[in-house]
Image (cartoon, rainbow, N blue to C red):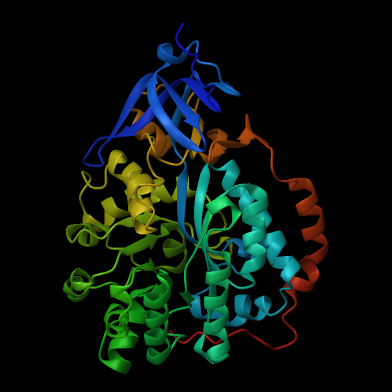
Length: 451
């Protein structure tokens, strides 16, 4: 008698599976099954082929799409505590009068609570991986570990903090990389090209090269920053990154709406992994231009989807970022054929993984990839009837349609029930802290914005 097959850890059956071809094209397989063992996708096959396969856990996903977990390529998770507190302001007032004064009130516990709230929101919205850039990052790492999510974390620093800021960022990156069973990776995190000096950016590039660390930085956030950089220094923010050596060590550029055509040859010469994170809702709020997705794609730079922090975006909803990216790019390019729903799904999956340097690990449902899977309900009246599954996912589905979220084969949410976090407890403790967090009467701020 042949040996019985080893039980799978998880089998998801009866779903429509979002799969990719060899050219990153998106397609869908009906009545599919996903077999998970040891935190990895073992196979994506026909549901009938695994009907008798023993498994520790099975999920009947009929009426649902199984797709790679969404990736939030740039956010500031603890800033959920400031959601809705700085509305209808230009960016300089948003920073100088509201956010940077309020951030001086944060305790480590506040950062932990904000990060836990963000993790709960992302799990409920189908995000399985996020890239975070903030302060007190040991607290964020603790939230990631507890929640079960995957994250790339960087402790942000300004040159105004002196060498200690850069040293703390490095110390955190070295201590925490590989934590949470490998779910935590790390980056060095200079805040921005306008708050970190050229000398400190060069020092960061040297540290990144020495310790094999990527860098996560705000650059060319808007056209005004690019114009100011040209007027003051004679070069663009992207050229600043190049002069510092950061384009040769692996860098994630947050926003990039101020990237110009003159920057394309500079980016093309970079020898490191370069990605850009786009968060369109915040750009609409601040009246910025969109990230030049088509230009960047023309030179092979991946553009991943992001939300930025909830203080500027009001949500961590990557579904909304996906829909807005498709719509805003059509408007910016004056071309209704660009960016299609399938292209938007590509940005949400494989391009986001490439932007974070996680290609081959996440972003696909394929053998050997981490078993980061979300199940999306397509039966709601706002989605039906489904003539085109890609269009339904991009333009009709909402975060609340995510039924189940899985990371490394572990179910973090099943049928809309969070399994790893106590959301009522988090909110109760956070509400008690809100009056102290809103205080701006002290007259302090963490930094001054002069982009």
